[in-house]
Amino acid sequence: MKDFAADPSHPRYESLLKRHILEGAAEKGMLAGSALIAHGRGEAYDYLIGEQTIDSAMLATKHALYQLKNAKNPVISVNGNTTALAGEDLLKLASLLNCPIEVNIFYRTAKRMQVLLNHLEEIKSKLGLNVEILGASPDALIPGLEGPRAKCCQNGIYSSDVILVPLEDGDRCEALVAMGKIVIVVDLNPLSRSAKMGSITIVDEVSRVAKNLVTGFDFQEEKLEFPFDNDINLQLTLKHINEFLSDLSSSVD
Ligand code: PTJ
Image (spheres, helix red, strand yellow):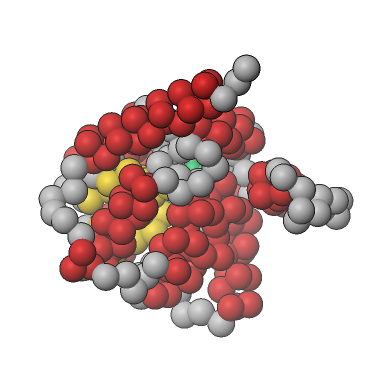
């Protein structure tokens, strides 16, 4: 893996750094073949929100934290891209919540599962955290899904009441909602099936979300208004994108 050449003063530093992290993850065998395509789609949507956490995303993040903190059996589900970009902060979040983190990938191979589990174990021991990392021995199936995508762990995803599941596929998101769970989706595309299916959708970049969940862990819950309406929050996100684009277009000569 080549050294990272960009300087923090580079205007595209954050974006270049994420690409560099994903390149390294791909070399280690952590990512699915289409992971970089998925990331590119995410980047395009990130442009439309100004590569920042917008108000509707922060509101969804606070509601997500509220649900995770008040859950009986919360769980954090991670795939290849999420582990590479946000593994460290999500392990910290699991430690704060005292909940398991489960590796659960769409394009499942035994080899990639092992590389991802090892990666998380390494971060865990580096940070000295006490977190249960699940996924090595799936022993339950998500009803309504076919094949390896249904596999999960009984004491993780299967028995959870609240699940944080970034960059999830629409079908699996729907199946998790059908199991009666509160499903917290992270997806930069506010129009994706997962974004529309989720109970709480955070339209924001996954590494920013993971950081916000950790740094905002002790936010003032009493200021939240209930119930959270995911459809209205997605409408606010689209309104933000519309206004952002129309401001941009009026600044072009
Ligand atoms: O590791 P696996 O096997 O589970 O595979 C992971 C990917 C992401 C390859 C797989 O789940 C996949 O193909 O996902 P999709 O269907 O392309 O959807 C990914 C969604 O995540 C898209 O809507 C992207 O806009 C969004 N996305 C991509 N990168 C980010 C993101 N959202 C937030 N933060 C990102 N960094």
